[in-house]
Length: 290
Image (cartoon, rainbow, N blue to C red; front, side):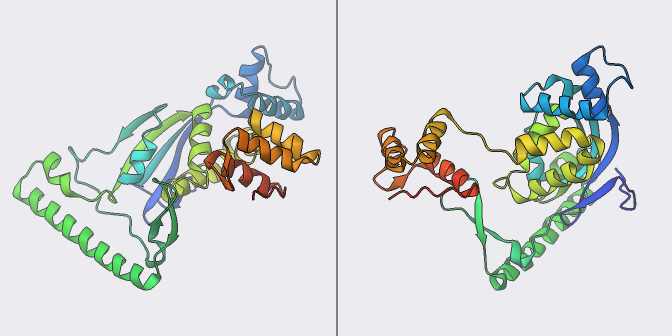
């Protein structure tokens, strides 16, 4: 799969990855048309189209968004691709290293970007290693990548089957794929992968797709998505009760309620309570515990 970094539809991601827009079907008007069924072009004002799209997304009427589809050509590290491919609502055709020589490129980590394992999240990261130690890790990474590729080339030259020769290539090796998906499922992908707690590498791809491609392709849908999904806050039934108590000046009653329901034990909030407190903090609402 050839890449042309000069194309206006191609966007660089990470050190050697990219996202390239191949094709789209439908646009904002297609969403409106599906929702109205009998919609005729030119019979409604743009402002009414925008209002309808916002209503649909606000109330989770998602099927009209399936009338739009997009096809992307991507180059992505294999470990990142493993997360990506879990979204099984797309059509995929990936570069095959059984038929072709592997791509001679692996994602490199700069000295300041070696992340540490999070202490309170088994699958997340927090903080980074000091750059001096990071430089040593980066140097060893380059040595490892070179050794793996040298061995791979030696196996290929010897005539070892490609499907076997590839097995020791690092997960940092780039792969390429064509990825086609409808807008409804794409927005679900973006909502998960643009979140701050998503892995940095896939978040960079999601941000590129959303901000540089989707925002131009379906600007009304993108605006509604940002307002009602990415930048919105939802409250559970319990959280709404606590908010009501806080706003009516009954903070001690609210705290007692959280203790009774097990969200707070002593002065320690559980994970659900911490997430609720984070929402309050984002809204500049002070609700001290303990």
